[in-house]
Image 1 (cartoon, chains in turn purple, blue):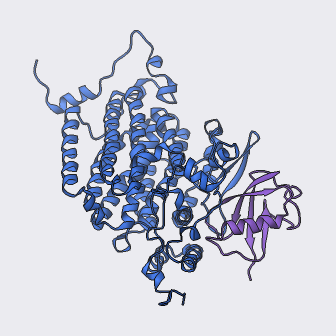
Image 2: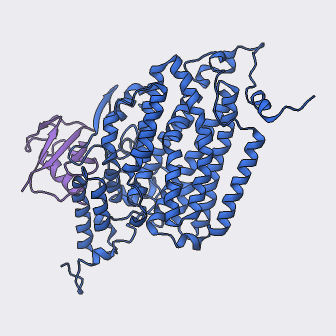
Length: 80
Length: 500
């Protein structure tokens, strides 16, 4: 099932709508959002995903992480 | 019968109220149409404003003003006159003209409601003049820009914008439909006459006419000067309405002022923020948008609040913070979604970025990396490759103001998700969420662009959405103003075209 999320990449100037599947891994959100925002923010190899202030395990699936449609997630690229 | 002199006659003519014998006052001025709190006319009879114009004087003055605009149009309103102007200024003109014409028309509807349901005859008289003003302000940009459509089809959006589902049109309609059509005359007077006109546009027009003069755009200078003199008069409706409301319901007065100041600010940041800091040629910039806002808008607005005994809006600190960054966040975002717009946007070069850094020392470091990234992509792709600096993923839009989610900073976007009756809403900022929470019945059913897309009412593919739903066709599609052909970008390439 498709899960539309509002994604906010640290360093970017706006929030984007990210479409993921409920069985996608959390790291896929980071990759997809960085790709979507790459016009404005250079992608980094690693990034953390946050939901309601908590860092999500990158190996969790979207549904296991408790994300539901139109939730806000934050993606914070790691330095280096 | 002796003829009264003008000063003796005017109060007789404009203060023509009477008691009703066949119907109740509540039926002539129902609360739903006249506004709440409903008060008997005795509470409104002190309503007064300083202009005290008669209809004959109004017509004479307006005829003179129209003659002046027509004279300037004949002298400098031809295509060849506009063709001499700076390209970035012309694109600011497209933005202003498109957002102005039908906002003014819709305000005319609000004024007409005031001309019938305003609670004092002097108010109704002024509202009638206001309506005539607003229709004039619709017709002037439509007339002037129409001449330019054959030269540049983007000017067609002076008329077209409000008739499309372009995201900016949805945002503008959401604002002005509520402000001018969905309000009673009391809220309209505070939202439009007091907050938008007295607080923002009246002063903006003075500033814009000065910039237009410097840029050499005599037609626009004369247009906004002519409009501003009307605004200065009919904006006076708001003060006596607010004074009466404060006497009877100060909490509602404070709420309406707080709500409409934030709603006005959001759109003002787009139109005037873009124009002053990005679309005015660098050599002609007198003040930054922030300096203009501090000197002309926020200081004046605070004086108005103090005069009425009102507090500053509870979000004032956030507003002051936003002066430093919000329109920059919006502009960088819009630049990378410019294909959804009807005007072209400029890439700020080294000199512009140095100026912006000087004017915004506390926030520019957060924004400059975004422009560096965009610039690098232009360098890599070369001129003409529009796609290399455009986003392809659907942006999110605020469920209150309908503008893209660009409040806060690049480090911490201020958007927040709120659940209401089982539906999730996203708001770009705390004040937008607060306005929704105060009047959820008014806003909850409105579908933003994302909601329409998810409901299958709008295409999910951004290219298709732009073309068929936003109705931005290839001939008007927003581009980089020089398609990446900036001299300072070329300076980074050697003779063989390779980057150095």
